[in-house]
Image (cartoon, rainbow, N blue to C red; front, side, top):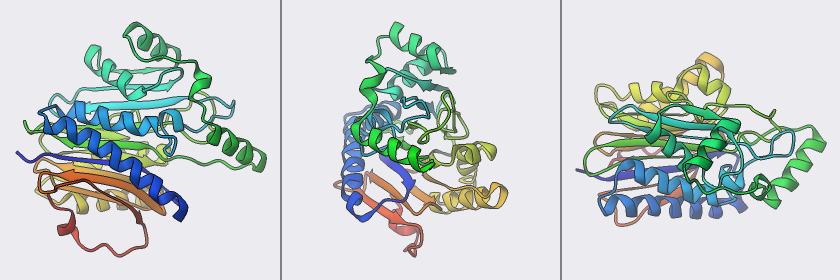
Length: 306
């Protein structure tokens, strides 16, 4: 069985002086997940491990790098989905935890559902998650950005991090994690913790993780749409692009996605300016990372085949 893992660090405008930190973070996350797969770990374990790395990296809008809401606080959302059982666990608008993806994993294992706000925090506490003062999740860089954008009346930061993986038993998993949008209202939920919207995994087809405008993504159930488009053996590159076409045509939305199928083939697409991505498959000796520009001409799906 082929092994495969792919991560994204968000679809957004990534300036030239930010590209290397985005690639380095995605490489580190991919390697963490690959190490799990290589020693026989499950796809769920690999996705959790990879996303935890991204949550620790203030480069990305998740965990410690989360955007601040309109009250100047960090509220995070995350979810995991198991392609074999179609089980999912998620947390929304959670505060005071180091790794929301791990809390989502424990929700999945304990009682597959979506828990939000104070209920999610209480669940994390009673299930031994790594807790902290909510203020400790505010990075100085995000605080300065929040102050600048609030003064200018701007709102941004709808990128997300995510991962999809295929393990040696042929099981698929998907995960997402986000800090929401800069200055969004407290309690806001986007697509990230919602199965079928911000992520989806179906063991008969593939797995997908989204990033982008959560409200638009949710309206067309975009992650499940992308996975369903794999039916009939369609390559993940083509399925991902068709999903972006659906988003644009139906709700004029902006997003990006990564996609993996049961054969370990990978693909991605986006209509935001850039997307940060890294991946590794059984055919590779090391992971590969890049920041892709929307306007660049793709070289064909064969480049991305496992």
